[in-house]
Length: 290
Ligand code: C2E
Ligand code: MG
Ligand code: MG
Ligand code: MG
Image 1 (cartoon, rainbow, N blue to C red):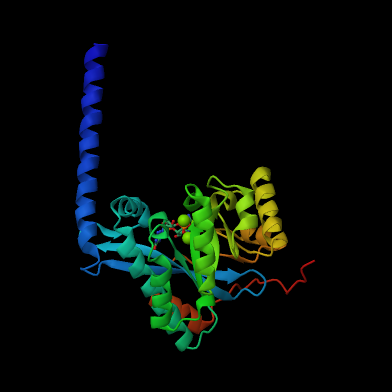
Image 2 (image 1 turned 90 degrees about the vertical axis):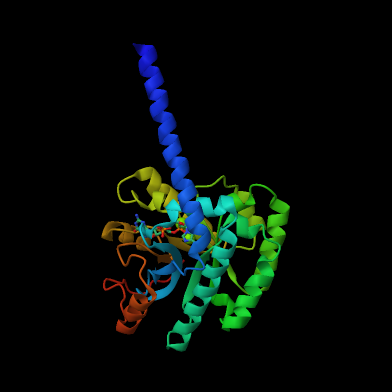
């Protein structure tokens, strides 16, 4: 009967929930030990200048090398790390490791490469955030202007005034600030005016179909113009094809990152790319910006 079917469906649903809850518990307890066990690793995705074709920076992306689960992507544990507050010590590890890496690249003869580091809302709410970043910069000796903190629009939803103050404190360290996944949050254009931001990163959901979808194309063109009119740099995320690349170049986007050039790679692979001088082979001649 329908009633019986309904109950079975409910039971199925409930047991699925239990599995999910158990999975969460398992991951949470493993997450608590992951730092001590040295199970986290950063991969780095190159960011390429669309005019010169050269690597100009990279984004540090967290992975969890779990002994049984294998390489766990951030989508599977970042929100749990957020909820439990574990993102705070994990984020501190990310920041230090990424800055050490950036400094090491500088020492290896690759000066001026920028390092993007993702900051979570929970870290942003930590009173010690600014002093801990200052400490890492001092400890590693990294030129602060090479550190680019990636923030998402959701950070500013709660207390905008406090958020702005914090951004100015961060800026006073000399670091750069970027808005990640631009256009996907509850954005208000007013923050572009009020916030001391340096970079917009166009979310890859807009980049995906730029070559075929007129609306997405219009949005991307407009965001590039908006960024430039506000004197911000603009980086396109998730570039996977030649067509997307050409479109972005034609419309004056500054930089991109995406599988078309490289997936996120281990530090040693990044270093090898730099040593080999890997660059875009079809770079257009430098063009004057109007
Ligand atoms: P995000 O900061 O927007 O990072 C870009 C994501 O897009 C990365 O996914 C990257 O691998 C992926 N990506 C880059 N190019 C392409 C492409 O051409 N095609 C496709 N399909 N994907 C591309 P990843 O590494 O899985 O990270 C996902 C998200 O997890 C990040 O999005 C970021 O929000 C978060 N995350 C990663 N590392 C950290 C971290 O250290 N701290 C915090 N708080 N969040 C992090
Ligand atoms: Mg990011
Ligand atoms: Mg993000
Ligand atoms: Mg993003």
